[in-house]
Structure formats: structure tokens, C-alpha cells
Length: 571
Ligand code: ARG
Image (cartoon, rainbow, N blue to C red; front, side, top):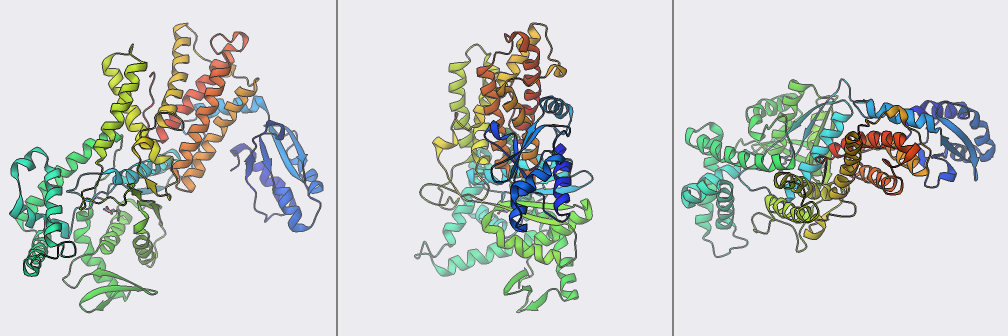
């Protein structure tokens, strides 16, 4: 990571040693005595070239000394270069960053299109906390790509096709409770689905009559086939199940602040599958095997058409790739699911790459969300519903807001509690590296202090309130007044400078947790400044500090926005 303006300096210095050398990242220092950034290039190169590292570092000094933005450059220790940024340059950079609609984030995505395939629940089941991760991580990936200038298509690739619907139709015909369906449609569908599972699960229920089980399964297959052939009654039931599910999901998404550009489920690609499988057969990429169509990929075999002609998950995803290529010509497609699907994605990516496409295909696999007693499963009935988690979080936030902010009118307090509660859950999820498994813990999920959404939201509200009080006193901040005289002002300035760099790293590595971390650091620096240094009563420093609060406020709002948190003006 190198701040944009220092990149050419580092590149020139590195090239003077070896034009082909990798340019090491600048490392932010923790100790101001060592400068703002440390560069280890000379040390590394000298070792490789068996030269004296200090002497090499000395030779590189002129590439930095006296250059714009650099107050001082020194050789330290065994051959490190310590760089001290110039305060006036730093101040001017922050002002420019605040005015830049992109907030200083490199526009690496200009002219490029990315599709982010995320959330993607299987319909006719209620959303549980396990659906949170794909939704949160995918949403931040959408926001990060937009911040870098990409044209983004966020697509909710819902599971709305295939055998589950045949099962559901059979269960509907036998066991439906119309009143329950009217009151809680998705709850009733989920009950029916579980009921079908129980009625056919001979492993867990050895007492079941095998003939009855076989009959249920046959019927389910037959209903699925009828649905896929366009049978009007099955089509109508399917439409109804699906629209009821989506209506319920939409209320949850609205609370989570998540929007999609498309909600194209698996069914959207149903007609696209056969032509693709036929083409793969014709080209020899796929082959017939015992009535099914398969692809060999090293030791692995991917089935793309089952014996009975039905499409597979892989075939549907291949048809979906074709559709997206034709419609959007994307430069990149990102799929966000749990890691258990890693093989599926690696496999169909290789097949699609066999078509010679230039689109970058990325699977972001996240770790499992488990309960202390093990995995969650709708069938086992041990799931925590997402709405219940959100409701509980909002209730707890509400208690805090009522206690702390009784002066704020009721309706606004409710809105604050909603933002804080839903935000707390979102942040607890995002702050973990995607790859790590999470054990669900109510207390942790609802944490309202420490590294949490409330901490971030409250920090920004503090900035907003300083600006509001200044406005009440008739003084608008003028960013041109910004000076960085005090160590704490400088520290905040550095956190502001680093924020867009970290956003770029988070985008490159598909790691929303890095945005969370950068936002947290920014808030920490802001709070240290805010609590130690008077702003409105700062005397000579007042105008400059107000300017700093102003640029910090812009950055804090952006940071919250990138995390999908709703910034609050007061709390
Ligand atoms: N519906 C799938 C699931 O719940 C996730 C779909 C992910 N996207 C895709 N194009 N395969 O596991």
C-alpha cells in the first residue's frame, strides 16, 4: 500500500536500483519518531545483492528529499528509509480527498462492469441468520466496486427451480393448512417442506413404509417435471410460493438496507440450459455417460444433464454465465456463498473458461455460521430467524437510546434504534474475515460498545454535532483553514489519508473486514482528537480544527456508507 502521490517517488527510486524490481509497499509506522511510513526496499534489495543496506538506502534518499509531500527522509536502523510527510501537503491532500466524489479511492473500475451474485436464498424457506453473511459481504462488495468506479450489477440469484418445488407441491396437496398459509405464507411453506423431508427420511425414521416413501418421491419428481414443462396449475402454485417468499424477503432486505439490481433466480435460465449442454456435447467438451451428460475435469466429473433430462446446479450456472456475458459483457463476476460450494465454483469456472472467455470469475467463500451446538438446519428446526435477530438487536438498541437520549422525539428515537440495532448485527458479521467460521453468540452479535457499529455511528454523530453547533454560532467550516499543528490532528489526518488506500486493498482482496477495520481506526483517531482537543473553544485553533472535523465528517459518512451503515446526525 502506497499513498497515490508517493507512488512515483518509490517507483523512480526502485528503478534506479533495478528496473525490474518489485516496489515494496510503504509500511505505516506506529512511532512518529520513525516517520509516517517506512520503506524496506533498500534493505531487501541490498541483502539480495550482497550490498551494504545503509549505503544503498543513502543512495535512495535524493529520490525523496525535497520532493512535494515529503518533509524529511532519513535512513534508519540497518537500512530502512523513514519518510515524514509534509503537513501542508497532507492538509491539501485531505481537502482534495474530501472534495473528490470518489473520496480518494483509485478509479480502477472505470469503464468496467462487475456482476456480484449475492444473498441468493432458496425460496419457500424463511431467511435465517445463516443467510446474513452472503447478504452483508456481497452488499459491501457491491459498494466497494461502485466506489472504485465499476458499473455494478448486484444480482440475487435465488434458488427458485428444481426438485424442492415438486416436493412442495406434493406436500401442499396433502398437508396444507390454508389459514396458516394466509397468516404466514413462508412459515407454512417451510413447514410443508420439512414435513415432506420427514415423511421421506428413512434414515432418521426407519419405521417409514418404503413403498410410501418411494411413491412420495416419484410424485415429487413427476410434479417437478410437470412444473418444468409448464403445467398451468404447477406454474401458478410455483409463482405464488415464489412471490410470497420474495415479498417477505423484501421486507428483510429493506431493513438491512440492501438493494439488488436484478433478482434473476435459477428459473430465469431454465430455457438456456439445453442449448448449452447440446453445444458442449457437439463440441466434445461434454460426453454422454449412462444416459446423463457429463464433463470430465481431471479426476472430477461434473454432471450437466441428469438421466431424466433435468438440469443440474452446474448446468444452470453455466447458462447463467452465458446470459450475463451476452447481456452485460462483464469484466468480472463475483459469487458470494459459503465455502462448502468452493468446489462447485472452481469446477464450473474451469468449464466456462474452456469457452475462452476473458471475464474474471471469482468465488468469495465465507466460513460457516454455526450455533454452539452445531450447524443450523431448517430441517432440524434449530434455526434462528433473521428477523428475530434484527428485532432483538433493535429492542436492545432502543433501550439504550431511550435511556441516553430521552430528549429526542419518539419517532427519531425509533429510527436511531433501528439503524443502531440492524447496524450492530451487520458490523459484527462484517468485522470478521470472510473465511473464518463464526459461532453465533447473541451477546457478541448485539455488542453495542468496543469495535462495533454503535461506536462508529456515535463517533460520526459527534462530528455532525460539532458542525451543527458551529453552524448555530454562524460559523461554517472553511477547509482552506486546515492546519495540522498538533500530534493528534496529524494522527487523524494520517488515518484519513490511509482510508482510501485500505478501501483499495479491501476491494483487491474481497475483504470487507478491512473496511471495517479502517473505519474503526478512523473513528479511534477522531475520538482521540475530539476528546483531547477543544474545537469550538479552541481559540486560535478553532477554524483549523473545525476544518478538520469537516473533512473527517465527510470521510466518516463515506466509511459508514461503504459498510452499508446508515449515518446518524445525532444519537
Ligand atoms: N441458492 C444457492 C444456495 O442457497 C446459492 C446460489 C449462489 N449463486 C450461484 N450462481 N450459484 O446455496
